[in-house]
Length: 209
Image: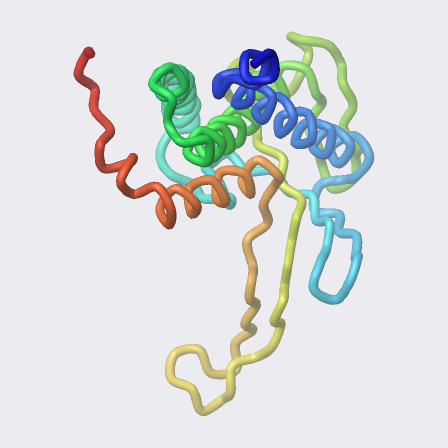
């Protein structure tokens, strides 16, 4: 009985979010303060730690204004917090809560970069390793910081045959995006939701109960 009170859905969701945020930020800070921009460390032939920064969404996509994107993240995170709390009080399935918490943690992890990295870190360059310089002394204003990415998995690296139309002779890399731990958390959470919790997603309602 006591265990049930301690490990409520809401508390488990909070623990998952905190754990993912800690892992994500520890990795990002270590990369940003120990590697120059575009530096790459070979782990294996198909796995590299490659430091890049982006102003866009997950997986380095660039969509619209940076400020609008950051504000959208704030709104989305606020909604997810409210929705997870609502589902927790209605005793939704544990797996559903876990997946939602993973998506929330990933979104929050990238938002932290936008909020604080520009405010407190020097700009990373190909010649200079960035350091923390204190809030207000960084390279960008609030909400305009860049997201740190580092995981690169070029599982297949080859060249298209010359006889192939359009791409003949061009380089082909699978998988080419560089991403971070927060992106992975979002992706795993979303895929699991679509595979196992479509019924819950279909029943999302904004009506007051």
